[in-house]
Amino acid sequence: MTDRAGTPDEPDPPAAEGTAAEGTAPGAPEPRRRRHWLRWTALGVSLVVLAAAGVGWWFYRKLDGNITTDTTAAAELRRYEKERPPAVVSAARNILLIGSDTRSGEGNRKYGRDKGTQRSDTTILLHLSAGKKSATAVSVPRDLMVTIPSCRRPDGTRTREQFAQFNWAFEFGGTACTIRTVEKLTGIRVDHHMVIDFRGFKKMVDAVDGVEVCLKEPVNDPDAKLKLPAGRQTLHGEQALGFVRARKSIGNGSDTDRMDRQQQFLGALVNKVQSNGVLLNPTKLYPVLDAATKAITTDQGLDSLRDLYDLARSMRAIPTEKVLFLTVPRRPYTYDANRDELVQPAASQLFKQLREDRPVVVTPDDGKKDGTGTRGNGADGKSDDADTPAPSVTPTFTGRTAAEGVCS
Image 1: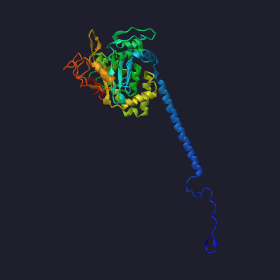
Image 2 (image 1 turned 45 degrees about the vertical axis):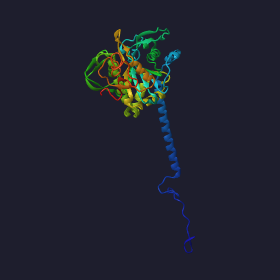
Image 3 (image 1 turned 90 degrees about the vertical axis):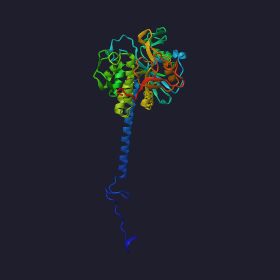
Image 4 (image 1 turned 180 degrees about the vertical axis):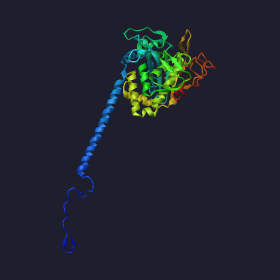
């Protein structure tokens, strides 16, 4: 072929070094260099992913290893399986939360001399409904007179069955004795338990950067190691512990008033933990998880990070107005005003509703301090209009929701 008549085309000269080869856009990297760059990029990404996975696994193992497992309680409860109440609604869960007043251990000796014993300073039965639509936290007064079964002491000896104040059960036989006492009192099967001491509570509050409270009057309580001005303020570890434990300096000095304050504080704590600022921020979430896992001793069904995460996730799905706090209907004990007794039939109605996983309705305190626990009830726990409530009427108990903060 020619470009003009009689003159053949000259062959194309070879590509000069450093110029683009045929089929390559001017200025583009050579295929070999491109492949070389892609390989290094892929290797770098892989290393980053592996490093992140390694760090994640290290954090998981650390948090998982923080949890203390209570195997002693499980062994003791198996001995009494035949006498324990059955689970009426298998999809619902009942968790017994126990605040120990032990003075042993780091950070606890400042609250008193360690006598080698401990009692339950606070006990709450947490009922999670089937489908996790609601959560009901019921406080059991530590001075409530109950029947405590024969329990195994730490030294292997056994106590006799006796009628005594509730918090002695924890001193007699620890968690297992407390669980059996609660089950005999309520007829409700306890599925899991958690025990937390003073130091653990303080660390949990500090991990969420404190909890806000409101005080009508200033407080100065040396016994609770608490000195606070009046007004709205945020309490951290030491102050928060004093706030929930104080009896003589806040309110009317009763244990009932103290339990109401504890419920208010726990409601505010639930609100704080459920906030996106905590749960969706890894830098805030990790300290909370680290404090929580270090703070608790739990049964084998809740002794892994996965178990606790599933529990926290189910709690987060419950609206705060469906997280309820109340105290078992109670009044001063007939033979000792410094002790409590159940108010019937209100207490039995509450236990039956929880057993059968039926909704519980609470309303704010109307000013009564006798602790009867149901709206419109007299001191004997009976309806003002009739001897017993009408079957179609759902009893309403004195309590609050997590949506009502301490400063509401």
